[in-house]
Image (cartoon, rainbow, N blue to C red; front, side, top):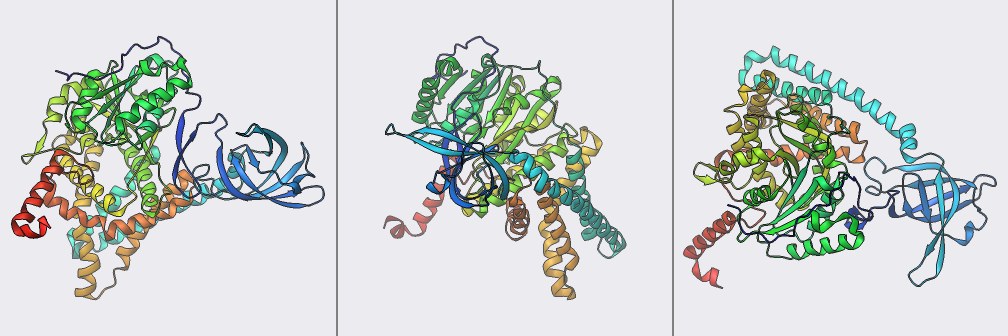
Length: 598
């Protein structure tokens, strides 16, 4: 029985029109890497602040100014008296360096390009008219970089990936030779290398399901939210701002008793969008439901599904932002009646905040574009990730009771919602990944929060992998083998690392050169794959992530072995977290009551 709702009346305008909202606020980064809100302009331009060197072709006169706005086709600069000699139609040689984050990854580079002079009239707030000089590029930046940078990068990285793969195979041949000396260690090295290489191979073979122009099923987007006042309005904007028929898309926000201004910000977002243009009928396509008591993310999602009127439901995290074609791409695999769930790709929104977020950029991309893509090759994605995933409503309703009441070793399962529901669906249906269904999410930028998140993920991965292991053997044979190897490798990794980096050097006096070379090659494959696909300067953080994993994150696994039944999140106040904190406080009070009171 669904709880009493606080909701906006749902009366959808009947139209098949597929339109983007005209001035929907989006998130971008300023020159310091901070996230700010701006408007989505039709020409996809970004405000900026960097130096531009201009050289007039006829007389060779050099001038210097500041760029204030850039797109892939033009550059707008501040007008200076030294530029009086320039007139409309003049062709000028331009040189400037695009800072990282200005136009997206791959564009952070020094540019030497020609531009044709024109002028733009700008009306100032005080009513005065100002003029800005516009340089229209003789070729788009996409064409320029493809000619000068990207083609070279993709060729070199592809050759490097093939060469590294060859070296890994040679090293594993060595493992066969020495297998008799330590069967466990060398068997592990063989299966680990096989696991890694096959993921990259099948990831390369993956193909996104193309868009069928005649397939537009009804979709209900459900956003569970708890204390997300900073981001919730941007999430709502991105969900409504979809290139999808208006009468076939609704958004349902389920608030899990937030204690901040989340609900107030939701209503402000609705009012702001209504003022933009009434033709989009925002209030008629959006429902807001406040739960009568804090019940957790799963209960919020189940309540949202009960309110949904369409046969496909999309789960979106409250700090995730969808690209305009995300839903259109996400639904395409459901043309297969046996498809039960589909995951989209999640990128990092706050990628330039600091080094912690930058290393997560590479990790996220490889986890989706390589690892999930490889699983999708067999229609068996083992985790339909929380930031953006789509399900058949009937399957959620079928499994909702077991999902809500799931326990493990007597403890309620309060996290790992995405992996848990994926396991229910995989038992009877297929699951897939759509690389062109893209969203971005805000990741931890503090090391302590990042570690807590990683520990929670390891616990849920271990718990749900043990569940999946009971039925995954019924799937395609190679995928099943793929899965069990992928389960063994991370669990055994701490033992193997201790043996190679501690036992062998201390007991045998042998420097672990081969093992370290293997780590380097693994890091290189991750970084090179990222550079190949994204052509971004952030590729180097693939090495940083592997070093951090071996030094820190790997050692969370033994802790997860003995605590994977825990139900606390560690990064938000769930009922289980509050209970655990009260127990801890009670123990301290018994031990030293005077200290606690003071």
